[in-house]
Image 1 (cartoon, rainbow, N blue to C red):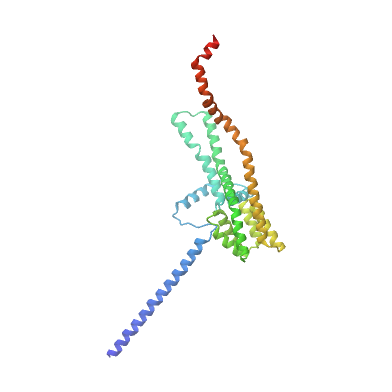
Image 2 (spheres, rainbow, N blue to C red; image 1 turned 90 degrees about the vertical axis):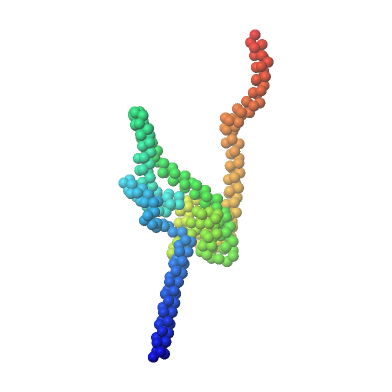
Amino acid sequence: MQGLDWLVWAACFVTGTFFVYGVLQYTGSRRMVKDRFKNTTAKAMPLYQRESSGNWMKRILDGVSSCGKFITKGKEETYKLRFSLIQAGFRHPKGTAIYFGFQALGAFFLPIPYLLFNAMHGKMTSGNLLFCVLLAGAGFYLPKVILNYIIRRRKDRIDKGLPDVLDLLIVCMEAGLSLQATINRVADEVRPISLDLHNELTLLNAELRTGISRETALKNMGERTGVQNVNSLVGVMVQSDKMGTSISQALRVHSAFLRTQRAQQAEEQAAKLPVKIMFPMLMFIFPAVFVVVLGPAIIHIMQSGFFKSTGS
């Protein structure tokens, strides 16, 4: 009977051990899968990252987009605005509604401080009301000015980082990597150099992985950036792919062309400097020089009584 009890206890121990081992294996495998998905999500560049419902920025954007729905625009103008937002780097699905919302809020809230100031001092006149209308118009067009400024800055950053990206593309392709593997590799390496080009190359690689043709994916990247040099690079790569020539050699020629073009632009800017600096020199530097050089002489002449003797 005692041996039977030991057998029951041994069976219970073995069963418990295997149960605990199975639970640990299950939780460990699930944790490994979650970590893998987390790392993949962190490395990839999502087109739109869904935020938690308690995020205050999400609530603000939702409120602004709800205000923008009251401004109705034509489909063509909405498409152009969406294209401009993409060139500026904004890919939010409610981007157009948020833009129209900022226009409405700017036109409504910008004149309010001026109206309150005049109302508190009792200076409400027709001229003040006209100035409020001008402030409302300025608030309505202010988002457009800011958007154009952001687009220009982003294009300049992409244009400055493009030669370095071309060098990395040439090195990777001459090392034997395929075009898609090269783009994936360069997208990771170029992040410290240019975050904008990193995002565009990551999105290009994502389009290639989904099955979009190479020509279409490259042209989409050129349209998203809106940079002339990127469009020229896309044309070179598409033409080399169609003709069956070496893409690395074409990229090397294009890289040399870009560096020559940048040197010519620097020389052009240097040649414009004498003309640009003339007006500040005439307005600010030359008067100070005249005061320093001629001031002591004029003071000495006045103290010597030259003007009095001449008058007499």
